[in-house]
Length: 96
Length: 481
Image 1 (cartoon, one colour):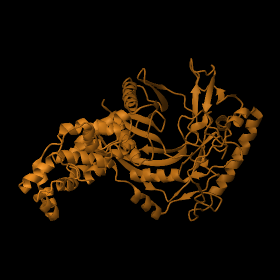
Image 2: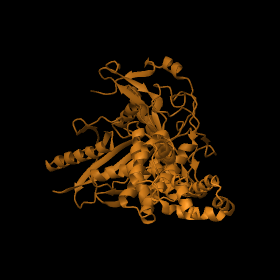
Image 3: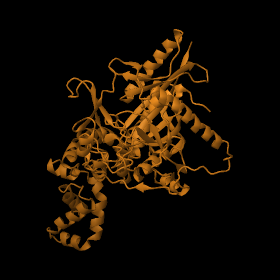
């Protein structure tokens, strides 16, 4: 299975990664390799194997519904790339 | 050509919990921006989500009330996209193993009722809120402000099958859904506060055709009325596109209520490519048949069933049953009054005309009415026994409501005389005479002070409802003195 350049660019855009032409070429080969490997695994007969949804042998971990303040807001705002307390500030997301 | 609309709704409902779905931050509405945040819902490194048990309990109750099948095993998945309202750059949601599948909801529109199939119900966390630059709002041009108080609020998304055939049916579906969820106390379903949100998938196809047309997804629908109007206008738009030989394209469209139009909206992720994968920070969850049965038996009687019972068992007209079951609080109140011996129809009339009006003015639910069911039952009994007229009952009710006192107290306060009804005193007087032979003997012997005692006994028998001025006269008359 091979990954073409368009797919690499699409995946990079979704991940917000800016890639150079050289990197794209490298990733084309690497991602294709990964898919080949998975394709190989896919050939295994798994019809009788119970699906594994989680690698840890635990289930049903809950917390009770009790509210308590964390009190971290001001510290987090201080370290944010952009803040106008009490808000975080980001570039305008509306293109109007 | 005649076209048929095909409508499906995706409704997000906030579950009524004290804390968020994966962390201990409060879900209280209207707090100072970003106050309800912590390392988990801010997506800080090293933090781990832990599922809120109550959120699951509420979601299961809602799913059962909507006739869904609860999955014996469910898990969470990451839905990945970049948007500033999403601190982790993914939303914890459910993809292939949701909490529940395959339910139905009974709606009534245009005088008939039918079932709408529900495809699935899954749990997820809400995103934060963006405050856009608008003149006078203090947000500088070119920027947006972010408030993460909502991020991590527990939601269920209820996805209907594309079974709805008209804008009015979509409205009826939302009404019915809200009704049930409020009844269960699973959610406030308050659109203004964002505890209920709705997206509509709309397509049209030639009438009689079974294949689905290309749909558009309508967003920004801020009220049930707007859902109806937006769908209406979108059906018109798609019809025009098809009739002029064009093609409907699959896209997200926003509704502008001021202009009553829909317009294309840039979606968060142009490609619907969310790269879902299992959430590694949360284990899987199981629900046993026993647990499901326990949830099922704990469900209250649902509005439709209660409405039918009010009509068949208590003989109420359909309209009354509808009004009384609109809120579970009101229906509970009604049943308590009737349980104390009041006539169902008279009680219903009084609740619909007097009580609900006063509650609405005071902004209170029936459960917090200053006039308790016992006091309303007492008032209605005074009226039923002919001690006060219907007009007096209505006249004194506002005072009972305002001061939180009994009918007797208001009557005394306003010096309203009870209707002298000698006939209804017969039985109590007869009893008092036969129970107090000694006192009667004394009275006959001329000891008039005993009269006060006997009057007191009669008053006691009539639970204070007899007119104390008439009782001595009647006593004397009966004794022939």
